[in-house]
Length: 134
Image 1 (spheres, rainbow, N blue to C red):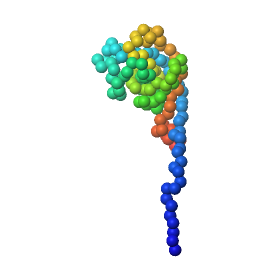
Image 2 (cartoon, rainbow, N blue to C red):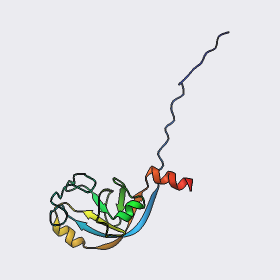
Image 3 (cartoon, rainbow, N blue to C red):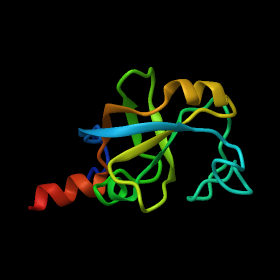
């Protein structure tokens, strides 16, 4: 008797990653990469990333980090076009707060001021798994 075993003939099925977005209302202000507003190394974030003017970044308060808005989380901000990435974290005194990076454009940051906005953020795979186990 002869047996023929065929392995791996079927094409692999690609499964799209699950994307779940959540939202929260936060206070939003703006900041610039200047020593007066940050530190003696204003282009380096608390996560160790290098900020580049013109790229869409935000800093988040540490309570938002505990809620699942982690380093490199994509965030959509009400009133702004595009997707921002979490690249910095704020001083522990802030709660439910984001800081929108505006490069070296101090006037734009002043004009923005402080506002209450809704943000949408992509949940991490870890947060999705944790929620599905509860």
